[in-house]
Amino acid sequence: MKRFLMACLGLFIVATLSFYLHKPVLNAWHAGVLSWHTFRLSNTALPDGAMDLSRYRVTIDGKPIPALEDDLSALTYNLEKNTLWALLNSDPVVVELSLEGELLRSIRIEGVRDMEGLTHVSGDRYVIAEERTHRLLVVDIPDGVDSVHTQGVPTLVVGIGSDTNKGFEGLSWDDDGQRLLVVKERNPMRVIEVTGFVSFVVGEPIKVGIREIKSPDSPELFMRDLSSITHVRGVGHKLFLSDESHMLVEYNAARQSISLLDLRAGRSGLESTIPQAEGVAVDSELNIYIVSEPNLFYRFSPE
Image (cartoon, rainbow, N blue to C red):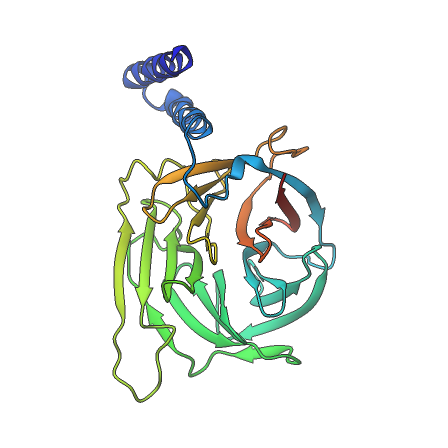
């Protein structure tokens, strides 16, 4: 109880200073909010089935991938191949990686620009998100090819927000709910559900549904930004990655935050703070993978 009261007092003091001094302490105010939620989640009983991110420790710490000269952005796990797939930030290329962070192959994606989100659906099927255009594309990437063209592929534009440089930042296929989950980076942060698009069959009626599943002003979105999202198959929980807040947060099926992985130096076994976390994925053994610009690879495993 004493720790709780001290945390509340600290937040009150920072809030008071923020009122009188405005911008100079806004960062301090946000740091106080993050500290409060870190304290709250570390002292909250976890429901059955929770991943409990606090028990995860880094097992591959910032491994460079020298074969990649461009910035890594987005990450997804292909259960059928037991490999990871990522995007390059400016060059329109998708790369396949081993679970040890070794480059296996590169595939150029023709007809796209500013790719920022990637998720595996099933088989050879993936969904790609373009940040500034808010465009989603369903793309098949078969074995043995080194390039894929997007001309004629199923495409959906979801026009949300007017800030084109703060558009779609991450997406994840929820196989349990047969829906696509999309996050907008900030200004404001948004979490959107898209149904009926990925399963669209040419020649049949189009029944696409789009709805916001987390209000932008929700107190549960206490991070500074959203850089990626992943649905944990079988568990039913979601992991939200924040680059600016240096944290990964677990949400349950009721959309409540329940545990947190601190991505700063000295926490979770990390030698240094993850500089710019851009993608997160979880494998079948519940190991967590994160990629960071420019070309760093991390793996976290439960103790």
